[in-house]
Length: 228
Image (cartoon, rainbow, N blue to C red; front, top):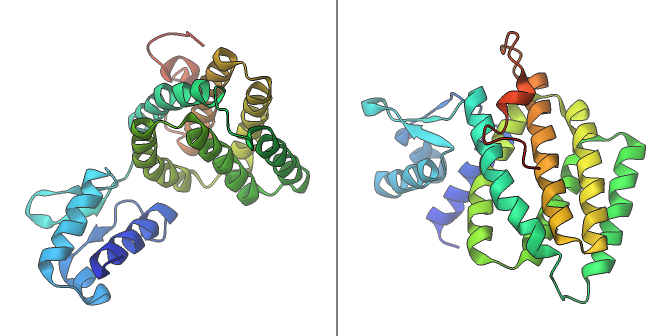
């Protein structure tokens, strides 16, 4: 990995983790000094981050870490519903020898995280479930879309700071998804994934964004209708 690539990954991780908060300004001079790079590669790094939709160019003022609105959250989860629903369907068709054993391992990890009431661990295991599905779907184009979206999801998660409440909601969905995967019921798995993403999005909006002021959140999430 080149020096520029390492700087890009480090800066991206700092944004995704919340170390660099949404709304923060990124100046070429500060980044250049921190990573000991000239202005040209720094501009390329910032452009690539903007291409991931985690920073935005603001005229002549430079780049700013994106601060997501309620509509942004809904749009991201709508995209995940389409992409990960299909990944879940395809994953059930996997012929990999470790398919069943990996599902059982994930089930055990999920149960332990719940018993411990450890929201950080719930996040980690939940992410492992989604990565497993992406791996077993074995579709490089869907994987590329997923990889891009996950940076946005991580930032959105860090804006809510309501981990336990949200992860208790997500835990149910992850359990049901693993059950459908174990049954190799592809259509059920796709429906369960979409339902899980809908309920998680509702939890994010209700717990992390309290300025809806009377709007029926459930009706806002997936405007194409209830086709779960």
